[in-house]
Image (cartoon, rainbow, N blue to C red; front, side, top):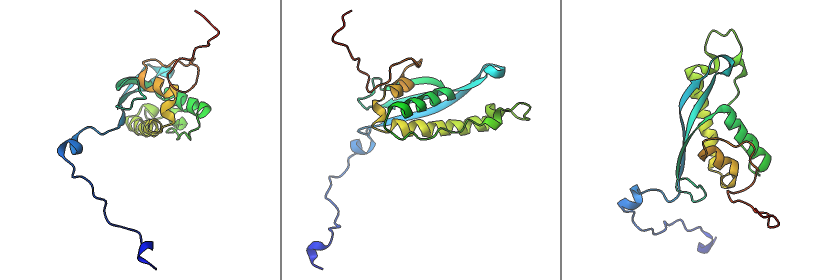
Length: 171
């Protein structure tokens, strides 16, 4: 075997890192936290909402910081929209916990603190996987979910946040 066939394993020469590089903001970041669960309502109209806080410097997002409140069914809506209209493989949501919703349980079921925390962690993993995907970042439904107070479930699915005008129509 000749010397030219052996891979060069020497380190690349790189410039030393200064404090600004080491402790400055990352070049591109997207942080999403799910926190502050609140259970509202009574009886069959009772449900839990979670705050979804996003911070980013990615130019694709209109707002660099946002905080909205979402419930589990909103996460289901987002998953269904992405599965229907995008080419990405959408990760699973944490389970529905149907057994926890049965009547005559001796505990709080889906409103028990340990379950809410477990679901919160699962929802946080779900949304971070999706939002970190470059193709998902182009989907209007993701932007609506993360940055708009109310989700418009009648929106027209499509890529990006630009408006499309029909040149044959006038106002």
